[in-house]
Amino acid sequence: MPSLESKIPPPAIVLVMAVFMWLISQASPSLHLDVSAYNWLGFVLVSVGFVTGIAGVATFRKANTTVNPMKPHASSLVTWGVYAISRNPMYLGGLIMLLGWAIFLFNALAFLALPVYVLYLNRFQIAPEERALTSLFGNSYVAYQMRARRWL
Image 1 (tube, rainbow, N blue to C red):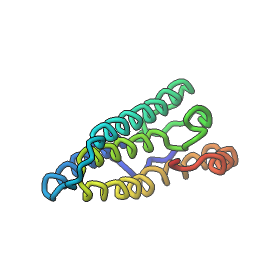
Image 2: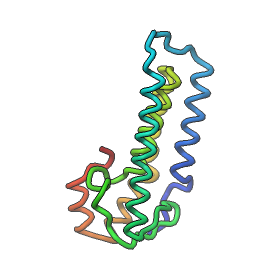
Image 3: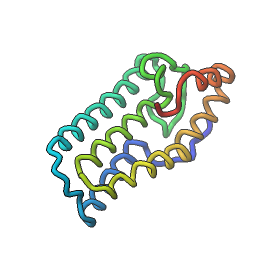
Image 4: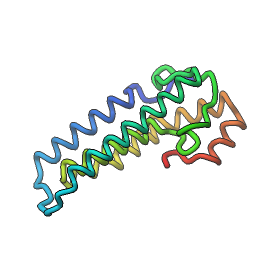
């Protein structure tokens, strides 16, 4: 597989986005609504996102293929488990965690980081991975793209 365009590990992108969201929330007024459940909802979403990402990692490990997108070397096309639902459950898990974090921060501007995360990963991580996987697995990967959505 050729070298991917992104040189930043996706978990680092999630962390940078989370810090950016926190900084935004500190610099701007928060939402002042009386919603007591938002902390719990944020916690649940962060947990669901974490489990989704870990399920993706565990499925890759079970298939004996790499989980490191910085050094791509796919030994097999994984289309089962959580990958039957999403082609990118690890990245989806990061998005769900960031959504939970935005809810926990309870700041409208923090939600602006979510489309930035999606757009960045689509352009610099997912698109290069898809080109490499199409090159490596050909029609099998193209057929998989038709069955499973990129995100959800």
